[in-house]
Image (cartoon, rainbow, N blue to C red):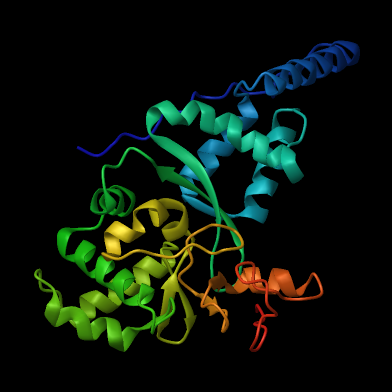
Length: 281
């Protein structure tokens, strides 16, 4: 039985007007003061609930969009803004403290091909890789098998995180549950629309933000092999480059980050990074 989504309390309207301007100002100041106290104490306010409802409805947002949504939520309820810097992280942590016991969380991650940051709503109650994919995506058994096959193709060393549609469709005859080429192509379009995959060039796919936020802890189990950790950020790395001296693998965006500091040295062997420094589009 699918794990039920958490119920978010219905938010009280703040549209009631006081009879006098002085009363209105006192009411507004009081709301702000109470919101500030609740926020410092780690309690959920209406702004937290409004933000959570917005994220649950979309499942995934860019971090920029999420920050704006948090700021808009505070503005709507006359609460102090938490849409920038460390306050946004604290704002999310407050919500996660309430979601933890329900088996959910708000996760944040970068995607590998361009380093963009995303925020998503994730199920943490799953017992394994197949379980988490089914709960998160709602796919049928044949679709789940093809999804898993796509991920397996992407993470192979020779593919370095990218798989062509022709290579993916060629795997259809290896599936236990048969699927037509048309159905598989339609599924690729749907998975891309839902941000499980990115089509980084025509007919070439890589993992999208929902894979990193919802599936990352289960990826080794899903693809049937271990996945290295980036030596710079300690997150798992699929798409990246290797040090020619010691074979350490780093995310492309981590190498770019190093280059912005003025010099690129391998964090493992501390030698100058050989080869071309990648760029992000």
